[in-house]
Structure formats: structure tokens, C-alpha cells
Image (cartoon, rainbow, N blue to C red; front, side, top):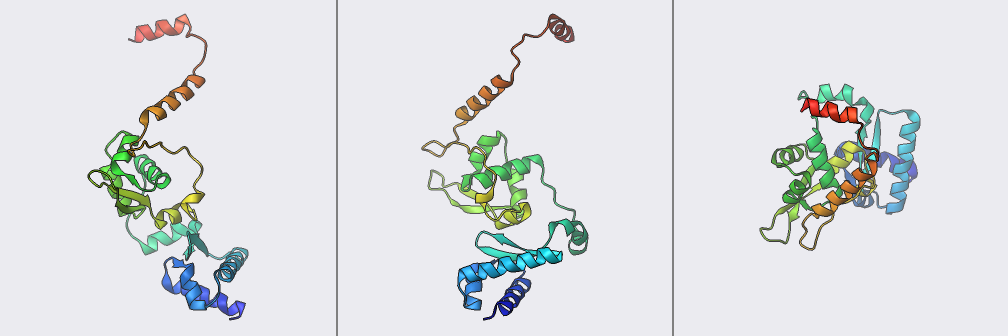
Amino acid sequence: MEIEQAKAVIEAILFACGREVNIKEFVSALEMNKEDIIAIIEKIEEEYEQQGRGFEIIRINDAYQMCTKKEYYEYIYPILDKRSKPNLSNAALETLAIIAYNPGVTRAEIESIRGVNSDATMYKLLEYNLIEEAGKLEAPGRPMTYKATPNFLKMFGYESLENLPDLPRYKMDENRQIVIDDILEERDQENRKEEPNEAPSPEREEGLASEQ
């Protein structure tokens, strides 16, 4: 198959499917090897960028999807969906980050890290299809585990979870329990480094005493 024809076929597949298309599906449809197909898709992406198109091809793990550019979201959203724009609270973002950086984490582990009940937040993230169940843990009670979805990657613009910025991961002991003491100790050490060495002035102490 000629390159220009292959490009047209790939565009047609992506446009018609409206979802992520795995590279294996392209290999089967075009009867070409994986490396050549990836090179053609990258060439299409370059052409879209040069031409200033309103859409692009994004990669999610081993799949590709044609979608509109995020800068045009405010124009498209009111036409396609009349619902109010979903907003993620700080609690939701915090919970989502824990799950994204710790695939296979349980609800109990999430709540141990956050220190609060996360039922409502988890429900919202599941409703928005940003997280999904990842199977039951082989532990007493067989708790459900969770992981981030491809929709999470698309929303935040990552090809895979491996592209997430480097952050410290919470430690687990042999029973897969969060080692909170180590985390708190590390935080205390950081806080001590930032504390001033000088004692507060007498005027400051008197002011505090009067306020009390």
C-alpha cells in the first residue's frame, strides 16, 4: 500500500471509530508492520500541526485517537453537551493523583493517605470515568483496587502513566499498609529545615499573650 493511501485509510479509521484504536487493529487492517504505521501516524500529526488544523491525533498507551484540540473546548462543549462543565475539587484531584501514581491502590489505602473518608470523591471520579476498578486484592476481605483510566490520560494530556512527573511514592509494608510514620517523619524534617533559628521578639510574645 502506498504511503498516501495508508494515510487516508488511517484517517478514515480514526474518524469513523471515534475512540482509541489500538496499533494492532491498524496492523490487521492495513497489513503493514507496526513501525511503518507509527511513522505514518507521526507524519499525519506533523501535517496537522503545520496546517493549523482544529483536530489532532493523540496517543494513549498503544492506541491512537483523533480528537479536537483542547484550546477549542470552550466552543465545542456548549454545542455537544448542555450539562454543566464538570469541575474537580481539590479533594478529587488529590484522590486522583494518589490513584494515578499508585495503580492497584485500595480505598482503605487512599483514606489512610488522605486521612478522611473518600466515598463521595471516589464516586465522582468513577462517574467521570477518570478511575476504574482494577480487580480484587489477594488479601483478607479481598478489597477492590483502583487505577486511572485512558480518559484520565486524555484529559491531562499524557500518553501513559509513565509520563507522569516524578513524585515520591507512598511506602507500603509487607502487608501493603501505608507506612504513615515514615512519611510524617520526612515532612517534619522538611519543616524543621524551614523554621527560623531566631527566637521571637519579646514584643511578639507579649502580643500573643494579650490575644489569648
